[in-house]
Image 1 (tube, chains in turn yellow, red):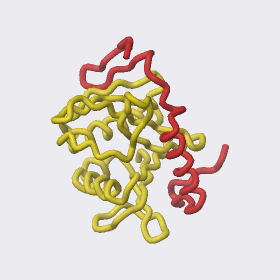
Image 2 (cartoon, each protein chain N blue to C red; image 1 turned 90 degrees about the vertical axis):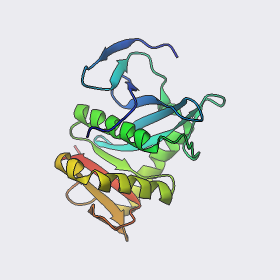
Image 3 (cartoon, chains in turn brown, green; image 1 turned 60 degrees about the horizontal axis):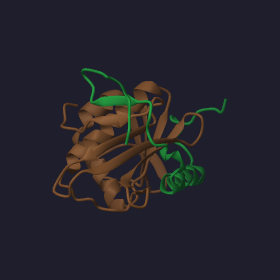
Image 4 (spheres, rainbow over the protein chains, first blue to last red; image 1 turned 180 degrees about the horizontal axis):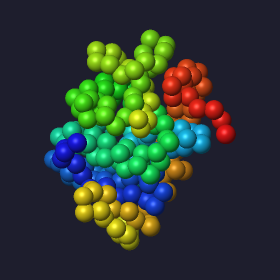
Length: 145
Length: 54
């Protein structure tokens, strides 16, 4: 996917990534983490770094007018992570229903490319199903084909 | 933040560093991991994604 995205900093384990969102609100540090839940299962976590309190804030709406670039940067982190952890299953759940809708809109928008590389399922109506348009999913699972 | 850039792939936008803050102990991230585990325990895994424990 040839989308505009930020440069990322990653650690050697390729499980943590940082980048800076640039916009009207200035530089805002974003952190993407792949947290191990079990041996092969990872949770995708994402948030703003709060310098003042030295902690992650995942409930803030940054509004730095670079939403698509931020999402592309997160996608870039996913691609990099999974290239180093080919057997991984990635669980992703937005902190709000609105964020989940944003994620599924992004997946749908780039579905031809995404579906070539990944199998994605969404959780809806108490069951997992293959990702499809028109659904409001609560969570997603992603793995390499 | 002090970081030592190890390498940047010419075709990649990713710089690998030896020095990065350890976010794994962040309270928000730990809570999200717990919530993810609880969600999957409650709702299970799709059949074609589930794997046998080693």
